[in-house]
Image (cartoon, rainbow, N blue to C red; front, side):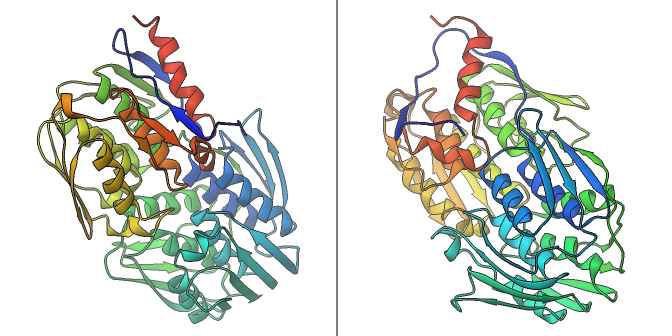
Length: 437
């Protein structure tokens, strides 16, 4: 992983507006889903285009501790996985997942289908992130799982002896990762399993992504309008699986075009993508950008930006990106129906409000979102941005520094969670655009 200083000052954009083509790393969401499914599968799988980041490394390390054969060739972005046919070889393991919510929740569910005693722990922030709803659902299917400290959060203890199947109820309003974890694990239950979603399902496109990965590895779940899922006993089969570039990571470069008035093409992501976060470009289009969509590439060209009132529940990982774009739009921007992002790497609603105000914006923090009134262009103020050990705060607020002199990003190394080379790729856009004035 690259080494970065404690603080990084962002140089404002100068010279011609950018005209660049970029390819962002592989999707973290797809990589970690594919790793779990490939580990449970029968036979070998080869994941190409896989992301190398903290989140994927902790998943790989956890699978190795469980006895799964995993070979990660970072140089070629390839991971080979020797599947265990639904039963991890190691009967005991103590695993550390840092602050990776996907690793915690997907792994906890997968552990229950085998036989053994396992413990999963993470960072101090991870010990504040909820998992109790998933544990209750798994226990209802015959598992024995619990929060070691009885907080409803990690560390998690799993005493596994397979899943019986039956009926499971899982809340949908805290994290879609609970549902995704269940869906990937229960094909290995002894009997048919019915999973019912209680309440409103947040981030539905991520569940669609989970079902798509399962389908690619040979298993089809019956989906009844995202309220009920029926899963018969079955298995996954190993295969070669190409992983798309990460749509959440691409949002920063689409936003760069919007903010600077330039034109940026992201290669490998287009109308054929399975990732819901590609809908972010639809929001930019409503704000005044021009969007050109092809099957495997997307180009955003910036224009005068107007405010937007948008429900971002389905694309909540791009909330931080849009909040920074709103600094340069004309009028009040409203972001709503994203209360669940308070349970992410940090309370993202509170963190956004605090840091946007430093830059001169008037922000009304609401339970489920934000109202953002940008300052006049000459009233934007320099600031040192606290990132809260949250990769998306760092990457998003760096974009503000392209237009506001004196923006400093604290702890820029936190981007290693999902995009270790972000700062290099951001700098490379300047090089591809040509010499600055």
